[in-house]
Length: 104
Image 1 (cartoon, helix red, strand yellow):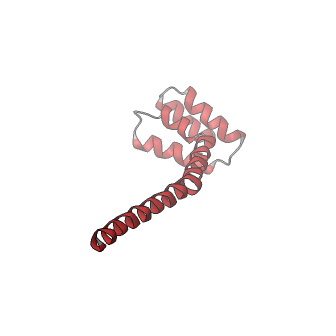
Image 2: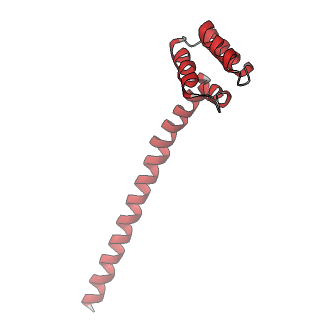
Image 3: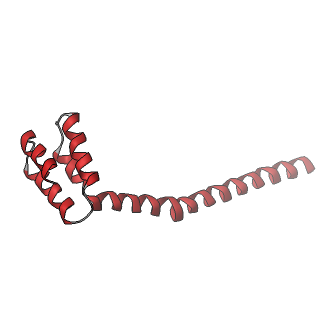
């Protein structure tokens, strides 16, 4: 009888420990990881870099590097927004995109 009591006690204790550990990990995700990921995602969206990426699909890597470099050099604000709009209005025209990188 003592053997069964010890066996069930150990199993129950292990299950409780596992549940507490899973709960702590879930709370860490909920209160630490999830807000950090949301903040990072919002920061990327606010820069406009994701909008430029959609416009550059199918372009050569050289063009993408030039646009990315121009984007990084341009300070946040109206000039950066004009660069984004210029690249979007180029509609994949390589010469227009290169002109945008030179202008801004």
